[in-house]
Image (cartoon, one colour):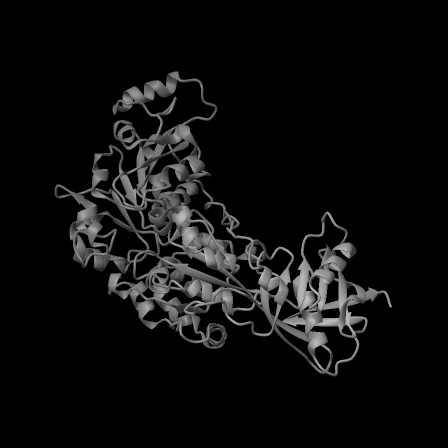
Length: 585
């Protein structure tokens, strides 16, 4: 980290610092107090930034950051701090030790923080204090964040304030480090409060995550280490995206920042490659997990805090791994983990999701969460006022109003191109409605070769595997702005692939050109334009060209339905879209 050009002086003496402040006329805003955010890993850094953002409406406070070294999971940490603060306000640990600050704040405590001159306030970086990490705590019974090894140095308690999210954490601290009890304050959970304040943005977040046109959102959460979902069920993500119909579900992964720090982003995406190819979306470790929970319809998770937070929002939750071996058995997270419904990876995943949605009782998880996070009403205000109180001697005043609610940022999912070949099954009902279920055509976990098609194959023109193109009944060009005109392209594909039943070329988001095989042959079939029509008070429905081609193929394959008329209803799950046709006779 580079040294700032302006900032806290090397001298620890307050009178020298005050003299510099008075002489330096370069600033625009008055700085009365400087606060140092101390991060050990990316997990704690993101929570730290969230906490220090509570001071945005407090005049006279300047925020700085540093990295407390020694964590195995510090990869990417400096880049993150630079992104939220800028180079001028990020100090090396050596610089931070010799600079004067009025307050230091950390969301992961370590005894080495005793070298800082500033009074230290520590908070949890997850849903309370739950995990047993002997490497950090020095024993196998103290939860991380509440151990004597972390909280004391040379017999003295290091933090000036230890923030608890619930009164029930005091008895646990009394066992692990009783000398720290006088330094505790119960503050609730400002991260959970901010999540609840952002609930009105659910539709915005769902749109960013692709949960549109009737799709339900499955958020998969994995913590780190071998007891996690990713560690215990490495094939589960691929199975979810392969077994859930693409027009009914969207699957998004939220994984612990330590996974990213240990394996690095390239390594994570490499290991998730098959699932990404099949349509999985992955959220980055810095932000997005709260927006995903707000947008979600289900949580499939483990003993990580994100799963616990999701269950606290009342979401139907299934655990694919429990990690009880690394949880403090006295913690509410352990209680929740013991009682939460399980996902059996060997059974039908679709049916398990539907079953839990119909039977889930959110009161069970809410009771455990109420034992983890004190219902204080306004945790953000409590934390902000606590920090300001520690800065009162520098003339910092506590604002009269609570911190203004700040919606959590919109998620920025990472996706690949997604599947280009789909296994399609469907039905045609008595009223002429076509029900379609599309599945990515991907190698099936546990089998040697690609799974046999469920019904027929629909491919996009971007499918590069020749054998799949030649086996397809439907081929679709999804790019409307193309070099070759739509009709000429469709005729060319029909000549190249005489076994096709349907060729579709996208024209607009709600309108496509169709070449339909009738009387048993292509080319020389029936030309149609398919389009959706906006109903009063409704937006114009989107029309997926692959879904359209699949529905038309199913119509042709169904005996006794007759010649396609001027209108068709396509159903995917509970979602319907009405399609109308004009064409050449």
